[in-house]
Structure formats: C-alpha cells, structure tokens
Length: 471
Ligand SMILES: Nc1ncnc2c1ncn2[C@@H]1O[C@H](COP(=O)(O)OP(=O)(O)OP(=O)(O)O)[C@@H](O)[C@H]1O
Ligand SMILES: [Mg+2]
Image 1 (cartoon, rainbow, N blue to C red):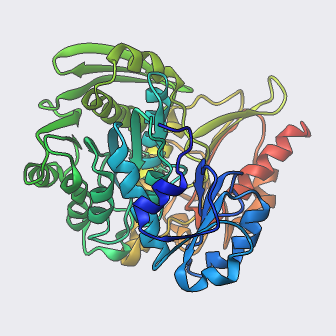
Image 2: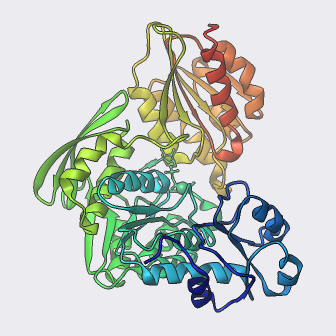
Image 3: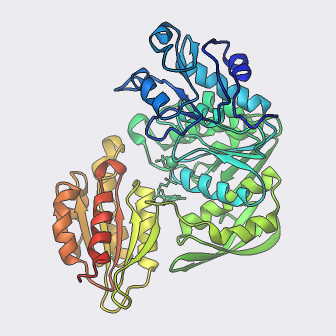
C-alpha cells in the first residue's frame, strides 16, 4: 500500500482513460481551485455556470498533481501538466469513487434524512476518529458529484467511512448509495422539507428509503421509530439487502429508546435504553432534536462495531456545526448577549427545534428571547401556510420578540401577536440596523433562515457590534 491516494497506474486502472505526461503521486482530489491543495488531482467538472476546464491552468499553478479532463480538450492543456483524459469527466470521477470503494476495507455508514445529515455526519466523524482512521464527506457534499468525490478521496487505509447522501428528487439516492455500498444506512428523520419536488411527505419517505437499496448484504438499517412514516421506511428496509433493522426514538418498542433528556444551556444530559441496557451520557449540544439524532448515532456506531464506552466518552465533544446551533457568548463579562447561530439552514422542523432551544436558554438580567427569522426556501406551494404555522410555536415558547425578513416570513409576521413584533423587513439587510439597535445585554438571540435568505451577515454584524463592547 502506498501513501499516495492515487498513482498513475491506479488512475488508469480505475478509469480506463488516457494519460498525457507522467503523474507523480496524487494525494487528494479537488473539484474547486479555491480549495485545491498541492498534490490534488483537479477534476474539471462541467458546472451549471462554469466549465472546470477554464480553471485547469490555475489548478496547476496552485500545485495540482494532475487534471482529469475531457478527451477532446486534452490537447489544449498538454503543456500545463499531467492529464488523465476520459470521455466524460463526471463518469471518470464516479469510476475513481467505485475503485476507491472496491479497494477499501473500511466499515462504511451512509446518512440521509430531511434534517440533521451534516450534523450527524460530523458527529460520527468526531466520534469514530477517536477510535480509528475515519474518512467523511466534507460540508454537505451529498449529491451526484459530492458523493463520488468523497469516495474518490477515501484513503486506502481508512477504517471507517461516513457519507452524507442527499436528494431533491426521487431516484437520486439509489445510484449514489449503489456506489457507497454502506454496511449501515441511517435515515435521521423525514419531514416536510424540500417539498418543492414532491407531492407529499410519503413520497419523501420513499425517496429517502432508497438508501437501503445499496446496503451490503446483511447490512443494518437504522430508522427513527417516532416518525409518522416509520412503517413505510421499515417496509422498504425489509425489501432491501438489510439483514437487521435498528430503531431509535421515544417509542416504547424502539431498540434505542430515549428515556430522559435534560436540556442544559449548552449541552443535554441523555438517558437511553440501549437494547435493554441503561446508558447515560452528556451530549455537547443543546436541544431535544440533537439528542434524538444522537440515538441514531448510537445505532450507527453499534452497527459499525465501534466500542460503546469510547462512543459515550466522545459524546460531550459533539458540538453543533457552525450555523446549525452554535452558541456564542458575546460582549463584556456581565453584559453578554447569547447568540444562537442557526444561520445556515431553515425548514419548519428545524425552526421548531431551534425555537425550543431558544426557549430553554437562560436569559441574563433584563434580557429577552429574540427570534430572528428569514425565509425557509424550497417549500413549494405550501410555503405561505408553513411559514404562518410557526406562530403558535413562538407563543407557546414565550418568545419575546420576532424579527422577520423575506416575502414568506411576512405571513408569520402577520400571524404573531402584536406585542411580539420587533421588526419586519423585505430582506436581511433591511433588518440589520433595527436589530442592532434593539439587542441589549442579557438577550438571547436566535438567528435562523435558509442559506439563500442571507442571515449570516446578521450574525457577523452582531458579533462585530458586541466584540466592540460598545453597548
Ligand atoms: N432531528 C432534527 N429535527 C429537527 N431539526 C433538526 C434535526 N436535526 C437537525 N436539525 C436542524 O436542521 C438544520 C439542518 O441541519 P443539517 O445541516 O445537519 O441538515 P442537513 O440534512 O445536512 O441539511 P442539507 O439538506 O442542507 O444538507 C439545522 O438547523 C439543525 O439544527
Ligand atoms: Mg447537509
């Protein structure tokens, strides 16, 4: 086994392409020159707006070990560096992915679900890395190029692999999981998210359940027993190569059952019945929804054969990834504000979960609980109603002030009691000045919206404002 991820011989064997020039060892794979590292193979994918071939010379300037390119374009770039020429670049990447999977001895997990894929994948990476060499998807690289890219990057000596698999349409997961061939497949949960391309939530459950089709023979399906579509997912698992189904949740028949969850300001104390054995651990993330995800994590690590005591010892280190509930104390001691940064993502399930965390976060003296919400995107025809449907949650959680922005959030704004109305703006930039003016020491501020709603700049503005200590 060589230290190189790929050699000229293994690249050729995997793709059946043509090499121009001569490859040295390839130590990584990149599809983006902005993040490319020295020694990477640059894959010149054709994107929606730009063609990767435009960036080949830049890739070599940044130290690429070679480039995977289209056969008919190879002549143009022969002078730039070593090339691996193929008939279709995405197919070439898939072939590398399949070859990496075929040579791997790793125990592999695949994670899908309407929410919580990245958080769960990151947690698994953290926990498993404490025990053995673990490879995992970067960010949310979970689609038709993200999954083969993650496979192609998998070191030959990885002992665990964790893959996030996502979809927008039915039929997308099956070919991806067919490449990953996991030993364990987890569906975190199924919710009314990405509804745009689905007639109903049942259809989403079916599409997520495609993840079981790629399981290795006798693999393990891990399913949320509390989900209304549990039986549907279970039936799909039964019809798949799965040899075992493990369920988690509060349901009395769940194999991994939540007995108790005590929410602390920045952690959760979780008590679980784990296949009949009582276990207790502190999870380094606040929120019942994240405690529930941790049960799925227990199911996956168990099925992968990881050591339970080590897994439990790692749970306090499982903190929320940035933009998904990270908790920041800002400002001078005694005059702090607490910021819950949820700016990366939003959908009804995730907003409800974040409101529950906001409600359980203690305020400082004279402080208030403020929800700053931007539009939840990709909800299709039901968008307006789904936004408005959050009003009762704000009321039951005793949220003091709502700051809202975006055309869909107008429907929530109109629905909440007048006393709760902080400010509304058409977009997040219109909210900035009024929010900065309103926030004062002691407040807990939760900022959430779909990435496209651009709530991140509000997080940055608040950080700047309170870093200066000018309040
Ligand atoms: N079980 C859950 N129930 C409700 N909300 C959840 C749950 N798990 C995570 N979330 C919330 O969902 C949001 C998205 O989390 P995350 O990025 O991990 O999901 P994802 O499935 O990877 O999303 P994407 O489809 O964008 O890749 C976050 O705000 C997170 O706190
Ligand atoms: Mg993700």
